[in-house]
Image (cartoon, rainbow, N blue to C red; front, side, top):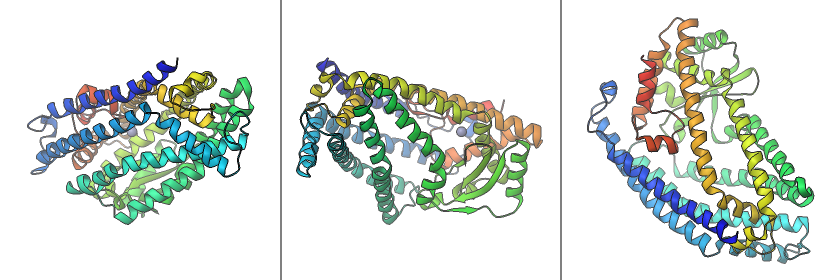
Length: 430
Ligand SMILES: [Zn+2]
């Protein structure tokens, strides 16, 4: 089995690169020379050429990043980097006085060893990604006028993110390690329960506790837009506790909107960039789409799918963690739980890649349903042509964001959580 684990991990890294490369090539090859008929009036002078130019540059950047990070990760795994990081963690933990290595490792020793191990991997992967994130934000996005992040905001975001990862991820990892130490044959179930409780807690607290750490929310001023939004929500039986404007423009000129809150009480957040670029009826249509996600029960459905899938993965994890070959495949000694989690994650990467394709397909189905919901409810309850407003909004958002209106099928299947623009506006206009 040892070779099977390693082969799966390396195949996922190399195969993932080949698929992504093929997908980027197909995207560039499928670029049209003029805008599709439905969008002929959507692009301002020079904007379509800018889109073509942006897509090409982004593809080239993706190729460079893909080659460098694939090579680095492939070599790291093949040369036993996982085992090296774990033995470094074990010796640090031992030097701090914890029984972290060998057969008499204690639970606390294993937790300390695991946290140090994950911290080492976290720092390495941040170091590998940082030059690309910097270039992507301050050169590529900057050149096309998207970036509004200052170096200060960028660095503060990174620091806050790292702090949150330690503060939230640390206890989670410790609890999962403890579950596998203490729960015997039912460890996978205990580990799954811990991870599920954590993700439900994040879903509940995230929007109200975490998002305000990164953005400022101010109540939308009273006026026509606000009363239109409230009137629409009332017809849908949605109890709005607040409509807020989020300062998305601090980081980027890209725009969005979302609805948060579990249960009947909802908070609505609109990016300030959305209000800058859309008409009132278009903002209401975007909001109606978001309300559609809630009213159609998309969130609980996605959560249920994720919880069930995680149960299956944790069951497999339980089997794999008991197998000495899993650790040996990556050069790890003593079967520590945290390193086992990473080895397992690498070995099941082909499976998680396939699962993400399924997630995207489900998400695209939900997007189509939310579009139809917005169109129908706006027509029936507010007696307006919501479909046309939503199509107008989607066109503006896509052209402003230089999004590809008609990407090749392979790109949609692998990456897109939303149907392509052209497909959406065709459906809304029929
Ligand atoms: Zn949506």
